[in-house]
Image (cartoon, rainbow, N blue to C red; front, side, top):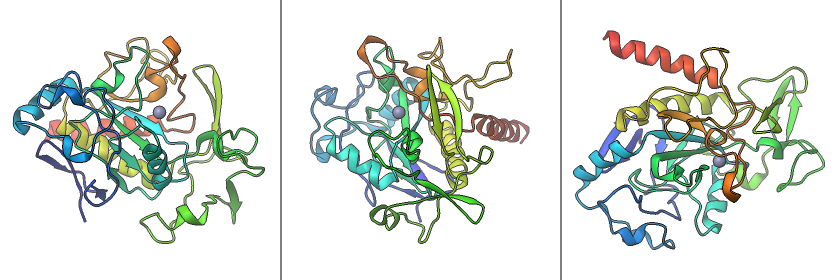
Amino acid sequence: MNQNIVSCGHKVNIDTHVVLWNKGFVCPNKRGRSTCSYHDPKLNDAPSRKNTAYKILNPESAYKELAQRVHQLVLHYDACYSSFHCHQLMTKSSFKGSHFYLDLDGTLYQTCDLYWKTNTAPADDQQGNERAIHVEMANLSWEALAKDSEWIPSNKDKYLKKRGRWVLELPNEYRKKIRTAGFQATPARVYGTRGYFSKKINDRVVRMWDFTEEQYQALIKLCIGINKLLPRVKLQVPFDKNSGRHPLDRLKNYSKFSGILGHAHVQKGDNGLECKYDPGSAFNWARLKKAFNSSTRGSTSS
Ligand SMILES: [Zn+2]
């Protein structure tokens, strides 16, 4: 079972299951980063080519350059049932992609070498993908709530309370694609008796059930691994020292931030771009902060 994430021949073992693109999902729409120089520049912002066209020249130098350029890991929800579902949508698109998918059961999929650019968060300065690694985490967001659902309309909520637990009702076609057989997706935390969280992000109230415990555990390992591979992606999340809160709206200094942040933190929708809300109101930023504090304490004291 592979546990490595990889870039330009460098590997980091992150102590959790990672399905690489040779065994799982291949990013259908890679691009060259305009800030990197060890590939054919015709691959930048050009239509998708076949996978063999994406060649990294001089991987060691490419790795050093990439580590200088990339300083953000951007977190997304995929508004899908599962990573298989998410990949179906990426494949139908002519430009979408994400370096990682994080499935409901905590399985990580790496879809391409991190050297390549994937297009999931242009950010309000249109440069967001150049500086970022992306992870699409399986969660329906407001699509799970019957009254808020848009692209997966339904007349009942997609989470049901069974024997005191909230459980995601997965259609058969998606349930059988989850790697952990018989996995039941249940939120890591619930809010009151209604189960879902509700907070305003970039001026919209986002109602959603939380990610799974398995997703949080794998995500924290991914963040720590990305930081080892690309140290400019610092182990920090947006946090306001004065209020003691994690801001959810777009940050003022979003293009400069070095660390782990959400799509909503970089894209409110200036210049005709879509306004973004992910990873959403249920996401537990405080848990990441706490995990990073103990992980950096551990490494400095040893
Ligand atoms: Zn997003």
